Length: 168
Image (cartoon, rainbow, N blue to C red):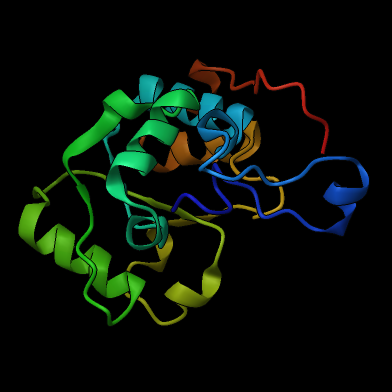
């Protein structure tokens, strides 16, 4: 997912601190959180993972704008799978993921879902493959380390550290 993982869900506390959500139209670089993208980039570098998007952003933002924002934000754009959009089945997020895996997944490949919304996965057969993050803080070094472990990489092999200096 993008929202809540690399695009933070901001609340009144953030607004009081002067942290406001940037609009994609006016600031593609600020649409996604730089530190969260740095941690995702480090995770991809460490694990060799490829990214498939399941975010509602794939239906709400025109693809060229979304791609520009991802490129401008230090998102690991080069790690997007060739078939990087999960299909939108209009049934559920888990159905979108399951459909993508059925069509394009390879046997024996380890995979995880990183999301900030647990409601999508309440009765899903692959709950043990879902890593939840706080939508307020997004992907952090500790959750990136857990993701690396879930993908079969010893978390002590790499230290994640966000380079963004924004204090939340």
